Image (cartoon, rainbow, N blue to C red; front, side, top):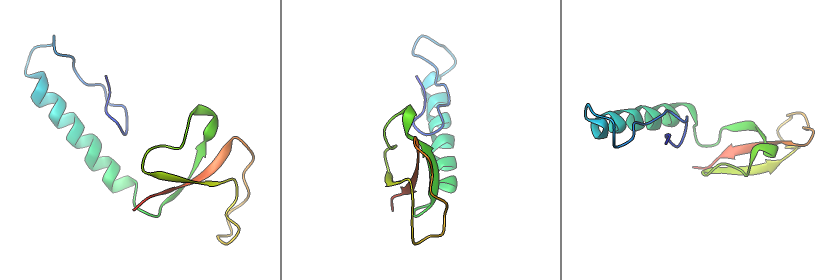
Length: 83
């Protein structure tokens, strides 16, 4: 299994050495990195051929006419981080 944001690998229950505390630490790192990197209002390019718009993001389609950003070719779209 993996974390939500960056896909860090978590240990499974059969692993020894306190896997619950290690998984908690890994999830905390994943969450903190995501909070620092993905700021509300941030706009990114997303390849829609790999799946649907990620949770917490809004699809802005292939162009944002008021922003001055170039129009994208499908399957790429702009996505915006929700508040």
